[in-house]
Length: 97
Image (cartoon, rainbow, N blue to C red; front, side, top):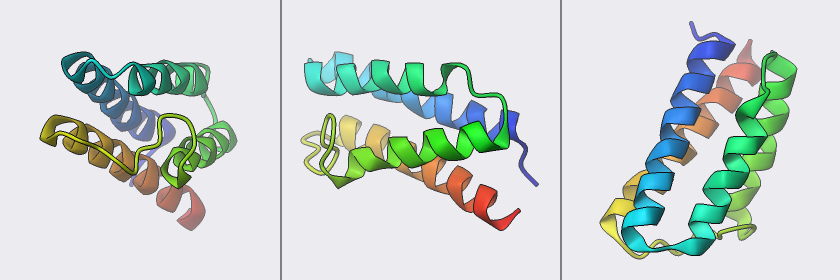
């Protein structure tokens, strides 16, 4: 069973991968989104904070900041998919428990 720290670890690792992909692809928009995500998850300590941060972060997939619906490279697709999985997994775990 997950705990907040484990879920945060996966999310932060996925955000770091997004930073790397944005740098490799010279993608300023997604680099900005990665910095926003850093701030969003920076002070998360509780289940409630994690739930709210994950909810806000998942809004990126609905065409918000950095719109993650139109990835152009395999590296970015991998980073974005990994982030979506980490956020979705955390949100599902939080809703179940």
